[in-house]
Length: 87
Image (cartoon, rainbow, N blue to C red; front, side, top):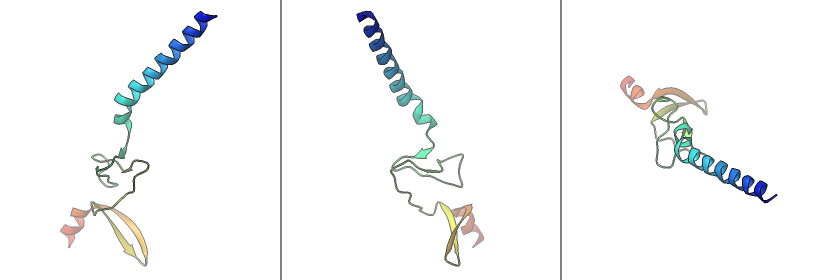
């Protein structure tokens, strides 16, 4: 009986250690959200995450552009630099 309990405890410890190692080494690479202080972009999807991580408030600084038509806001899908070149 005690061998079974010890085996279960060892399995739980190994599983917990494996999960901790996975979270600390592999999970950050898989995360596709911007952490505090990082930029995000719906235009430059290959270079930046598309949105903020959970719990953060998204703040659009003009990195991506949107346009307002008849009191409705639309994402243009264009970088801010592009619209400045057109002006």
